[in-house]
Image (cartoon, rainbow, N blue to C red; front, side):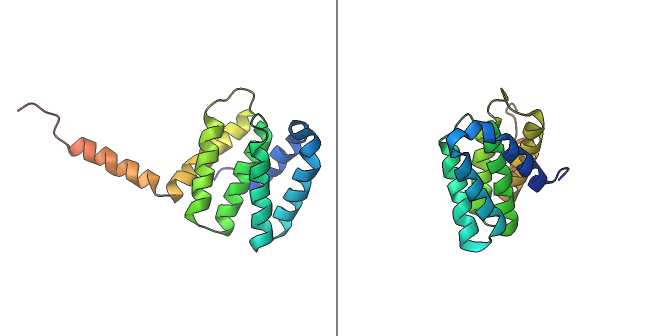
Length: 140
């Protein structure tokens, strides 16, 4: 990776304060728990952050923070569910670039590839490409 996701997460979180209004204190509390606890407490705080993000569909910095946090979850607990969550969040984020930080777009695009690779989707794409190349194209 050409960037540090934890530093990107901190910057995105700072920028999210204006987006969350009255829920900022809740976000700070959840982030504090997430950052300082492993296991069940950290996982619950992470889920709380994702739930809060659903309430603010236009909080682009906060959504970027959640994607970076999902990568942190992947590194702590490498399971398919975290890769799938990261993939879904990244796809949703990257649908439109309007109003989003260009650096977050670049970083999340890179993470998107990592989430795909973690699920084996890159390998699948290579196999599909090889299959298409080897398949007769018709004619005699």
